[in-house]
Structure formats: structure tokens, C-alpha cells
Length: 296
Image 1 (tube, rainbow, N blue to C red):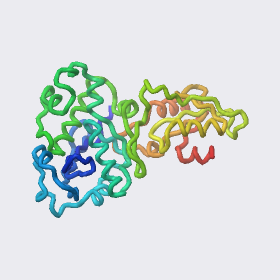
Image 2: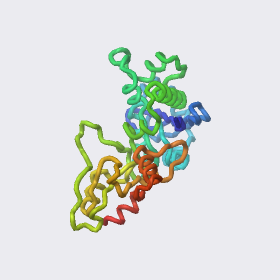
Image 3: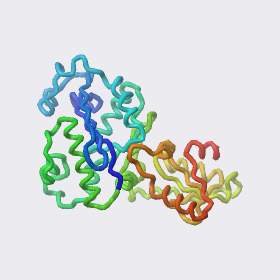
Image 4: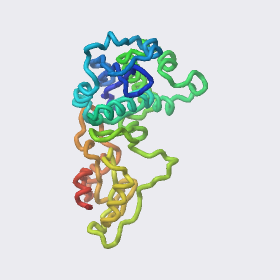
């Protein structure tokens, strides 16, 4: 199973999520720490004494350091198409807030929350210390210094590896099930709607549409909401299905998923379609942008 990803953690100067004063990045390669980077950031904001007590970062320590307007473009280049592991929605939200504050655009990556993975893997922590980093790392014997960004990132990554092993669920399945996607133009959004939401994309196409007779399936992180893409496909005549079957004629893949790098794997739908094509099925795999141009 592919276990290559980048773990990330941030610390903030105050209660405003956008006031990032430290970013920790840990690259996991082949299931082990490959390299780490700890970045001090000038939040250009006031430091709350409560936050200083938590992480020990003071205004003096970040004096002269780059702000997030300079940091985000640099890390965005390194994180393009990467799977980012973080613990709880805080870090994902903080990066989105900072990106909005400085109008830099978001990070073109996919986010997976190791806290959510832990909740789905181990029931014994419910009501027994919970799923915070401190309790989980203590339970699994992971040594780290809490609220030091690079240490928290490393711990999050190690917990993700443990969840992969304990559950038998590979990284790409965690991405499909609980992942959030973002591009340079959007804040992170859920890749797959929760099962309880009841928002199915399956629908019949208009009989007089230009693509009538085609059956389309969507996979990967799309730039637009999947329901919106499905509606456009149906208006063009496509029958929209939830899964790849012998009836499928078009598989639409999110643009960023067409160029899989840094350890990502293709989705199960993508792999199934390729297998069926190899066995003679007439399925066309197209990127989201190209497909939306087809149905406009």
C-alpha cells in the first residue's frame, strides 16, 4: 500500500485561525519520515498570552520572518497534488483562512484528517480520553512535544500510518472516504458527501441531448460540486451513475487526479475503468475541464 504523504500542522498567534505563526511539514516516504521542515511565520497580528503559553512562540521569535503571503506560494509548489495528513479540521481551516486573508489562493492538494481516521479505526478511545493527539500518542507510545508544529505533524503522520495498518484501508481509500480537496482557487471541500446526506448524483439524461446514450461516472476531486457536474451532464443527455459498470461509457476524472504524483494512487473507479478498458470495454476517460467543455 502506498504510504507517501506530507503531514502538516500549524500554530496560531491568537484565536483567529488565520493568525498562523508556525507551519510544520513532515514528508513520509515508504511509511517512514523522509524529511521535515519547520517554518516560523510573522502572523502580522497580536499574540495572545494564552497561545504563547501553549506553543512558546513569541513576537520576538517571529520578528523578521516571512508572512503567509510569502509562505503559501512556496509551500503550494511543494504540496501540489500531494495528500496532506493533519489532525482535526483546525489546520485545514487555518490555511484556508490565511490564504483568503492574503488572497494567495489555496493549496492544490488533498486533505485527510488523521483524527477522523482514528475514530473510524479504534472505538476504544470513545469516552476514554478521546481522539486528541495527546491521548492517542500516549496510547500508542509515540513520543513528541505537543504544540510544536513539526512534532505535531510527525505525530499525525504516524497515527495515519497506524490507522492504515490497523484498518487495512489504503491511503487512497481514506482520501475517497474522508478526504477534502482544494485547488489554488478554492477552500477545501469534502470529496465525498457523507452517506447520511442522501445526495445522489445518479440521474437520467435528457433524451434529446447531444450526448444522449452515454453513461457517465465521476471520480476524484472536481472543481465544482459533483451534483452540479451531474446536472450539466444530464442536461447534455448523459445518464449519470454512481459507480463504474458495463454500462459506463465515460469516466470523468478531476483534473488534478489525472496527474498523480507524490505517492497518490488512482481512485477505485479509475482503476476499475482501466481494467475494463484493458478487457475490451469502450470507456473514455476524460478530465473534468474537457468534459465540461463537451457539455456546455
